[in-house]
Image 1 (cartoon, rainbow, N blue to C red):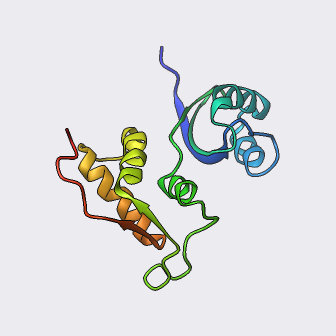
Image 2 (image 1 turned 135 degrees about the horizontal axis):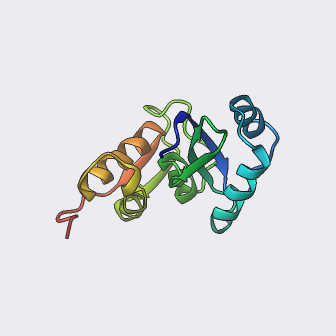
Length: 149
């Protein structure tokens, strides 16, 4: 028989660096989830992505067991890595902090495609470009033709 789902919890944790201190410990402890077990499993599954911020969706059950899905890093963080900046612009409409190319946008869109709610690479690239725009990052050049080939 299937286990009864008690709820879901969404966190953003650096890959390979989950530990019982806040914010992980209190969030899991309040739901009755074994904190150390989660940390061990998460760190084992994400050691190849060490240091990158990874969203994780934890589904916990009434019998205090859990399972989790690790997603790809947020687009904003990937854009900051590509542009080699620490943070976005305070005034993105006036202050442009960096430039990225459409090739870099395409790479991010391809990596993030599984977590986005779009069907084509072209629409994924437009979503990534929109995130860049809202952070004060300019996408240089013209949108490429025949993206989906």
